[in-house]
Image (cartoon, rainbow, N blue to C red; front, side, top):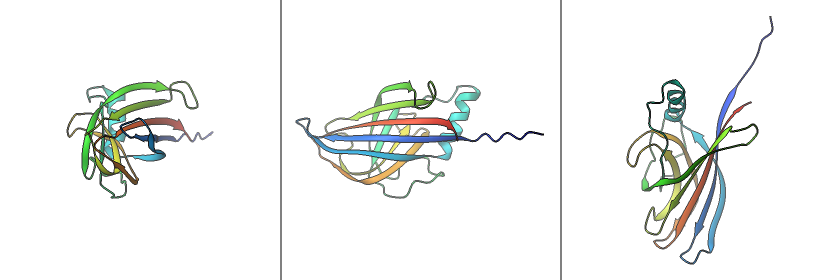
Length: 155
């Protein structure tokens, strides 16, 4: 008997850019996230019947608690923004990833940011994934843009 080992992995990569009120880049970072348990359940629910709402928002906060699969919300959310765009993109094979982009304009999500998450509602909702990172200080006049790519791949 031939045995087939097929392992699927979900991975998230973020590009975080913080600009001042003049458009000058203050921070430019790449980070990797954890897809949490509610995110994995969300993926299978969309494959099953599609009744769970699509991911529509990104949140940022000041929580520094390590990312864990059991988390279902940001630890200390400071702001949430509707996604600017959601597109299917190619990493290794055609359309194996989805890319979310959100902009946190002046006055939205200000403070010492250390966490971000993708969610399917303007408040509460299901969280797909969460990341923590070194402090990014977003002033009231700054604009933060996060490009978050979630890839599903065989490993």
